[in-house]
Length: 123
Image 1 (tube, one colour):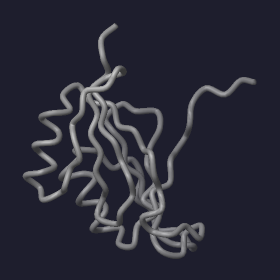
Image 2 (image 1 turned 180 degrees about the vertical axis):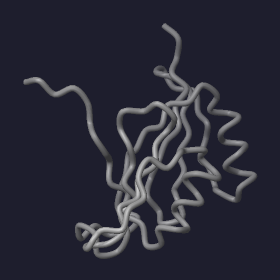
Image 3 (image 1 turned 60 degrees about the horizontal axis):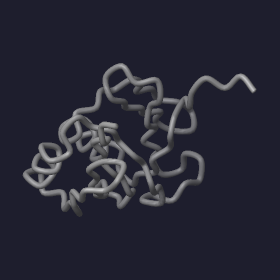
Image 4 (image 1 turned 90 degrees about the vertical axis):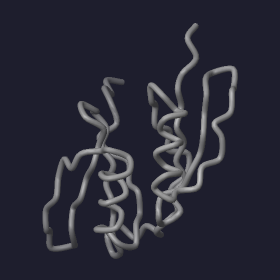
């Protein structure tokens, strides 16, 4: 096999503009694509320099149910600061908790897609 990386992860959302504000203004991701296609708007965001992007898939794109994504892990250098930023923005956060592999917290986007933040433990 010669797979090098994942291209994108689909995050089904009910309102692409609201999701865009959350992912850019609250999480600090950048827009990598924003195009109108015959099937709908193709909207992607990513952390700066990331190979894998998130497609904010609106209603009618791919038949995904808004809020159905789970287990999306975002690695951060400071989970505590990021949790404080999420809380200030009105996003409830569970954690962070100290685990053998690092410090981790979880939260959901405005549609209920489940995301996690991880500051990896130094070995």
